Image (tube, rainbow, N blue to C red; front, side, top):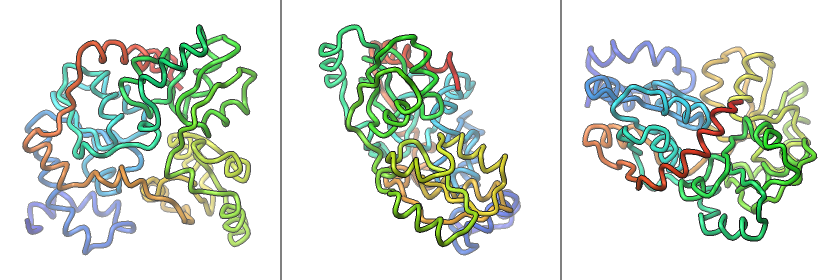
Length: 329
């Protein structure tokens, strides 16, 4: 599809916002898809939810709501749309279905997974509960529905500490991110029994890399996601969830900043904070990058890749997410 006058008129305001990040030659490819998707979602009463790690043409071009995992779950629960298109990974689409079981939830690529989610199964959780009877299970939202069904309460990186402390117990099973568990353990007296899962994006960072960037960029502020290894957290100026990192940049407006997380998030935050200079490197999430405009258009147009889940799993798993949403951030 060529960029005709109608498409140009409809998409130019979006391009003005992202023009410093997306070259004009690339925008000519994206614009027709953005135009068609935005038109089609209105016709079908569909809402497009996008995680912070989505590429700028998705995040700024077509999403109705873009946020971290917790906010996406809350938004999925209250939407009045008939169709939810989740621009994220599989566990996020499952969570949307848990929160809105009557809605049609579509995932543009069913192979968009997560190393954390795939690191643990429902059977693994049952074995842990048998080994530690009576100890509550706190599961990171980056888990499958079958794991959530065996969980007492979910959490995100934004509220993990708050969730753990809210239980009023001396010991919890915390799944599946070992680095996030260590981060929480460093801030509470609650004993944390962890699982050895890691995020394949964040585990690649190391403190030597961080210290070298700081050496070469005097005055830089380095902010890290708590899924990073402990040495990276210690070498950083601030650690927080994706929403926390976004807020840090917005509120502090540092001259230079490095976001120790996924590449596209830095792109998206830079667009919203043009006076801040962002220093890379960063790491790409191969799963998030499976979500593309052509795949989004195809699944919305044909209503394919629908999340189908049995009622029993939905009912069991939803309780742990609802408990998390009640506590909030």
